[in-house]
Length: 184
Image 1 (spheres, helix red, strand yellow):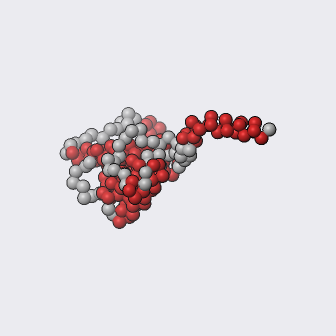
Image 2 (tube, one colour; image 1 turned 120 degrees about the vertical axis):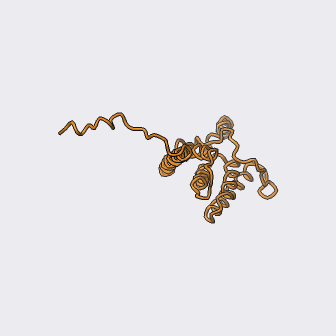
Image 3 (cartoon, helix red, strand yellow; image 1 turned 60 degrees about the vertical axis):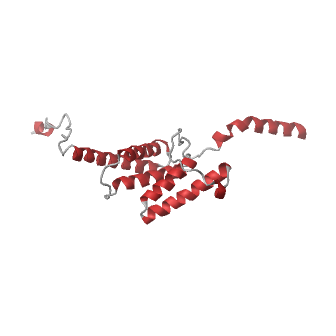
């Protein structure tokens, strides 16, 4: 009897082993992945953190901590570098994507930039879109939608400034009809 129970348990475990990677996915944000996107080309520090999955995830966690410290210190460029490498190492962690998107947004909004960085703007919108569509935390989804909206307004102002301020505002079809005058 024990032998039959043991063999049934082992058969169940062996048949479930192909499903383990899906079962071990992030339960908060199961759809966040890198889709082959390259965030950083810096090599891993396997001499310190070791090789394998544990070393990669440990280094990503360390880099997220360093990136957070750099953001607190006002070193946005250093934070972008650290957080991009962290997301490259662990692309399934939503916190890394959120921290990277916040750093990109802060870099875009900095007043010291002389020219608008359209490449960074596109990457930032991609990160916020990823968070808005795939993150299960409603507060972070709201933050993503708000940041996307404000970044689009900032880009619109930059286009207006580049064209010399001659961009015509779009008006609603009802704007010229004055619908409330009909009630008088």
